[in-house]
Image (cartoon, rainbow, N blue to C red; front, side):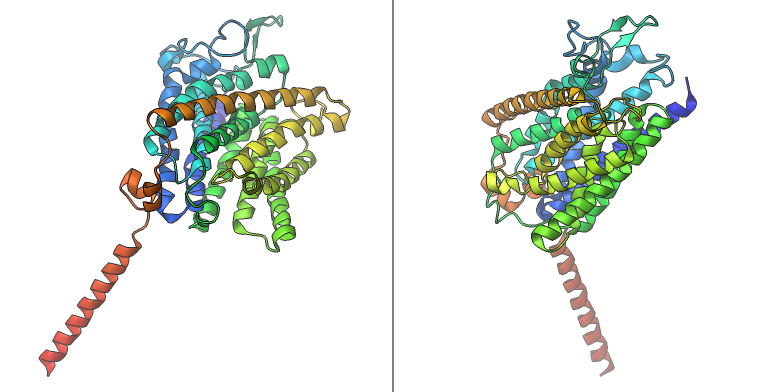
Length: 446
């Protein structure tokens, strides 16, 4: 056991947890003022639902003993409630198992929350909570097993416990979740968009972001937490974590510049929303690659992702699908870019120790990356569509047109994020009171 490694992983788990409230603010500022609370609530609900399911059976399904030895799913009941893991000595020889449990729980929570931005302003809250639980169970937990569960081997090299098929049989590199988190969430977002349809009046009648400072604050928290997301995945406070940290920084930096450049060329001016969207696109793309590329490779991946995602978000208008907050354009496209570019920019000098096409490795790693990306995309898209379609046909997932017009905060939560009218009324009453007091005083003087 290593106290430094344990402290590092626990701190990183807390940083990743902060990303979900950060995402709530990021999404909340991007919608209209009468939908801000619903966006906050969708992220908060993910914390509640997935947090409980992870303890009950989620961790076991993702990291328990493989059922059938084929790398598809861990045993959901092996560590049910985590009781058997209390007092377990170690994970990866240096940290307690519970530290790993906590760290991976935050990944599961954030992945579910990411999906919500695609259906802003039109998904009923109750069905969303049910969707979050079903999707985590049927999609995220199995995919996490595919990507994050590695074979356990004896000292002689014999496999003693089978892990996920993408991580071990395909040997695709996904250091911190380009497939399991971003492609997975992006494909689910696309499925929900297909099932629920566009917002009423889209694209002309849906408004602009109501609070860009809130969006910038959310993006800052995401970037801050992302260092824990990526560097924490090293599970040790050492060289790998340091390399990943730097790559995470420059990948996001390059993507922000690239996104703003595209805006400048295409629309004449760079925007604040574009800058923060570029940051997130770069973070998404560097996530699977951060242990496999040099800082120059990270800059290249970030630049491609920033420009590529900036162009991709405009496709929704041509293809006529209402991805409200560009989850598909940023997370799906950014995840695909980062995952595939590992096959080009991976360098043997990095902690991953694999060479991509540009470093003499041929297409060997590229096809592995492609198989992992396509498999997760297809599985998530189909299962997410089925879950959403069943909910829509049974209990109704889509908000009705009248409630959408009134505002989802009012109809789903009986609250409002801002009380401009009350504030104005209070000021008017105060002013009237002051005028009355002055008139009374003048009368008494006369």
